[in-house]
Image (tube, rainbow, N blue to C red; front, side, top):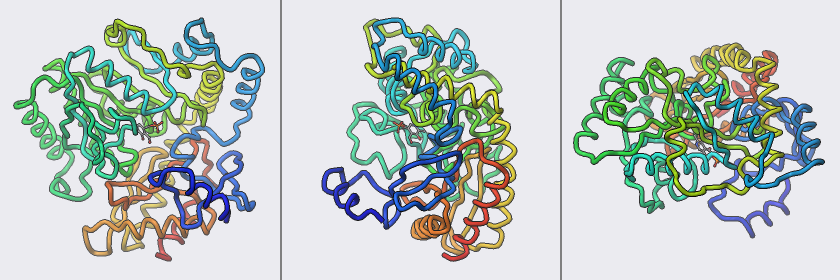
Length: 427
Ligand code: PLP
């Protein structure tokens, strides 16, 4: 579509900066739940720039707040008082569910997780981290070092000692036949066993629903059971809410709340949706953990006024329009609709999800084998039909990922499901 730009991209950008689609897409603008490409084609966006467009594309309230703030000052550094940063921190602390919460803003999810690891290792004086198999936590040296997804981590020589815990995936493999109770018990036994021969880990970092891993959720309560085992030993629980925060999962405002029976995590990290495309990430933790660093640790661009203004306007819109409730209602309808499609398409192994975070796992018909080529082919077909979706999973990437802006309407959900059904059937 834009061969010249593609050639230039390949000439100056890294090979590992992978692009979707055989004929790569150049998106030029968006509105609501739609985007347009350079040739003027319109697409229903069921991926939201990897869950980053949380409310809607080109939301006037966010655009106005950004424009007004940009007209005053873009950045003054954290050396000076910053009203939008204080105000967003107040809102996030209050929403976090963490007592005596302190908030630190970063510019990405990676940097948020890096900060959480910095805090946990300093607080606990240990550089051993527990992480989940198949997880993804970002691309910095330490974040990739705790990433369990084999598609991302093999080149990392991170100095953190990371031990991987079961609990992420069970659609296939040895845990597949277990029911929720048995699965939880098996994972808790595995964790206890690991801790029996490990010296004092600092923390467990985990996504409540694995994002890059293909939108897989453990049974409700798994992390509550883990939390009990961890807290008996003083080990912290870091919930990576980069994809699952802000009501995306419908039932809860934070993904961890499906596991919050015995209290919140010690540290929560967030990013993606809160800025609706502006670079806002951050960490929330109890004061005693946040304040354990005894040297300055600033982020030059973290908390910059213009990004905080975007976050405040975006969060206000989300809460005023109850987009969490919308994610629950419309996501529920979409899940049901896709499950009925799946029953008629042999290579759909499972449709799973919470709210507007829905995964469609593809396997070779009648087998347990991943079908990454089918996932890529469905992506292409959906695009040809005017629908953008994502893909993910283990490193075999055989799951489709559906995560539209949370203002998705019922009519748009129906339209997207119909396009996806045609794409699934044609492959
Ligand atoms: N954590 C999770 C769960 C993510 O899905 C991602 C990105 O996809 C990250 C962290 C890294 O965030 P960023 O790409 O903003 O650095």
